[in-house]
Amino acid sequence: ELKVEQNPLFLSMQEGKNYTIYCNYSTTSDRLYWYRQDPGKSLESLFVLLSNGAVKQEGRLMASLDTKARLSTLHITAAVHDLSATYFCAVTRGGSQGNLIFGKGTKLSVKP
Amino acid sequence: SAVISQKPSRDICQRGTSLTIQCQVDSQVTMMFWYRQQPGQSLTLIATANQGSEATYESGFVIDKFPISRPNLTFSTLTVSNMSPEDSSIYLCSVVGHKRTSRYNEQFFGPGTRLTVL
Image (tube, rainbow over all chains, first blue to last red):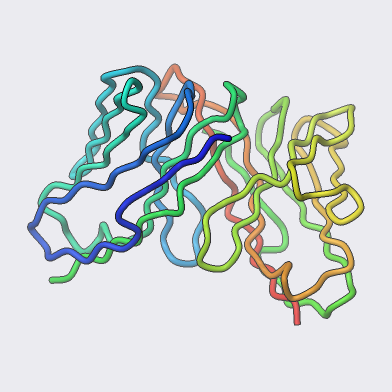
């Protein structure tokens, strides 16, 4: 059974600090997503990672994928308050696009 | 990227009643997906809606409780039947598409329908 584990589940950071969110998955998958969700809102796609060693960056966020270790990381650089949200990683199940297994999410709070 | 709209955006319903949620996409898509997000939880796939055939349900979800329609390639409905407070969740419609700036498909989500059952 495909499982996705994120840690930490809660993260309180000060502005200007760096931190990493980890996402482990239990079986092979052909793509990994990172989403952001603001309270009361839907999911915003941040990154889709397809291959081993893939690295993508957007602003203060950088995501990477190690398919051999079944691990993805979301690195936050010099956090700002606007990054406060819940971040989910998700992987496709059995190569079936659309059928995603989600992690439990990491609730990030960035304090001044 | 696909633009997805849902109706209603939120509703408060009485136990035992049913609610139909609509999902409209601005482009034709082969498959549409319905997810549930229970309060404070992650997302779980309910079913895949294919045009012209029966929806495919995930383990733990049945057609009698969550009937789905898919009359064309841009529209789908999900009905939550005989509701109980445990059905209080956000229900999200999702499709696979690609951003104009990307050559890869990725999955997009609608704004969600926030359902509260009393």
